[in-house]
Image (cartoon, rainbow, N blue to C red; front, side, top):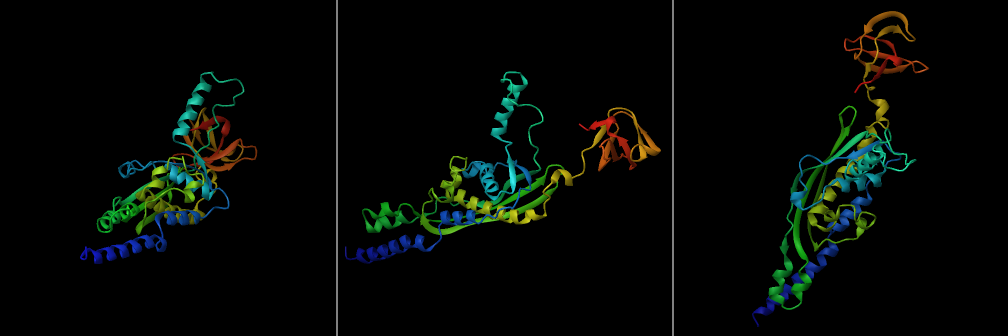
Length: 316
């Protein structure tokens, strides 16, 4: 027993240090809460956006849910986009529309064609690399062998972890398919502390949104930190993105529904530049007559002129 006395003293000191360390070191939970509170906001909505999962399902291997719900939380809190549901909610909405189309819904339901908003932008969350040391070194099991009853129980939730994650967020313009923004984020933990738990910013309406494993696992919170980092950078970069994507992009192509002519000037004036057959594709420049009847267009040969909008329809 005399020989074990120094070990007991050393173990007691180690216990004191291990218990005090979480108070001195920033925990992964407090990091997440602090970073989430720092997500910048937009003064106005830039446009509509839908969140799409990447083709590579990296989250299942980490025991996590899809990051789609996580990014939705950030988007809602920043106020930069109007979120559109293209996931399970949209699938259920389509079922309702199918009922409307079959005539099964009550009269006056006001559910039909031409009501679904178009997405201006697609946000895709992906991961570049991850290091998930979810087990760590169990300090409680080590010290319990020296100190004896009770201490192992107290220390059982204290582990040394080292986890990192590098992620990327991409914003794609739906109309042009251009990647208008791409930002990387990094999250890490090299800490000594008690196991992660609930509370913090997660309690503010996040629970039940499909992000439970991001809340209750270390690697989940590290990935969350990485996405907060990436989204914070993304919001800063959004100043260079058009807040009227529909008007900024090239006009949708049209096709001739009836034979017609391309005129030199607005209103069918000037010389005829060429004749159009049915199904000829034209590309509007955006210039129109005051009554919206005559549109300036170019054809596949580069000819530019005016044609009556009564003769064409949107290309399909």
